Length: 433
Image 1 (cartoon, one colour):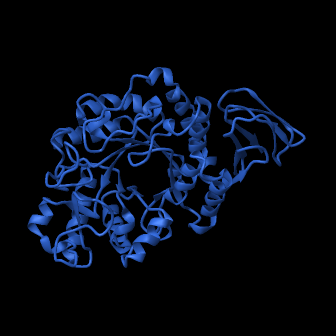
Image 2 (tube, rainbow, N blue to C red):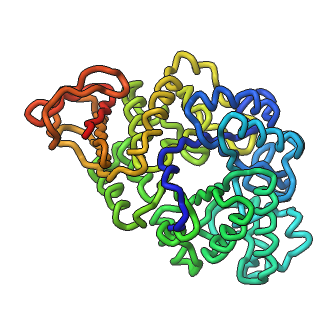
Image 3 (cartoon, rainbow, N blue to C red):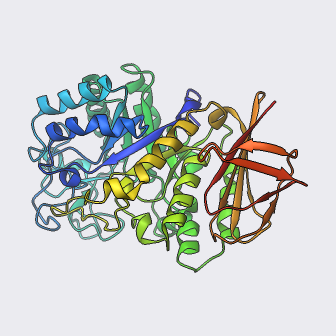
């Protein structure tokens, strides 16, 4: 783990925005007007999908994929000008939030500036053609970090450029495919501009790592990435979570995988906890009821790590927007969904230092499909119970009998004979020492 990682990142809420589909115009200017609402959700960091011009050669859909980047040093005119982006940075800071942008350094578009000026920096297949090594990414071609150290210098210079403009962090696309030594050097160089810069790695799941290595390519595990990154995705456990929702696996299997994180990663690890993102189905499309949606949302906030919500999640959107076309977020159910109010409450709960400093445990409950979490510090113990099956019962918990207050509902939580009666709502309470 990067030694200077700030553990308060475990208390943070990240808000993911795909600018094209976020609002009516899809511009930086219009996003500025939404910052007040976003801040009121309890958000600390606004994270934008790639902001750069999109390649036209072999593009996907009508407008192309934002991860097929033509020029790392420019902004997509679809979103506005560089001055508009600078104003967005300033406005984000004025609202007390930080701004993170996507970095896509595994590949560029097939008509990128770098491919035209430095073709020697790119991977070629056995036929001598520009290509990508992994996946059906027909609109991009891969960079080759083994060819020329000048590539490293150029890419790091670009990172320093955006940091100097006021960007506060990078979410690094498929960071696992890029040499860890590059990321370590990049972190060191950017720290000269902003020592508090935030590094988020899109790490990949274990099956993907094995598959890539079987093809003879290098790919970093989460444990390796933590040498340079503050936060890694939780894709090492996400597939078990989704399989449970789809009835393909047990809750016990998912919990076991989350428990493993406590001793396979460094002691100061931070995981990104998200129920959905631009690559995954909307959580509202995967659960059966509003009660289950509330339960999983609360669980996501109370887990150890940074919470990320994807714009539209607070409106209980079920449709996953296309990356390649105009496909606007449906905000029409925002007020009736009630998720925004829940998220505001959960964000307040998450800001308590016990969420970053407390000794954390996650356990499978003794009744139905239940999970309980605990955080313990020198001043308090925080406990949270999640009844995913919504079945009645009494859950055994090894805590002192007494009457406590549910931090979400303000209702009494009664522990009697070391048991708590389950509810269709999340149960979160503190025991002060």
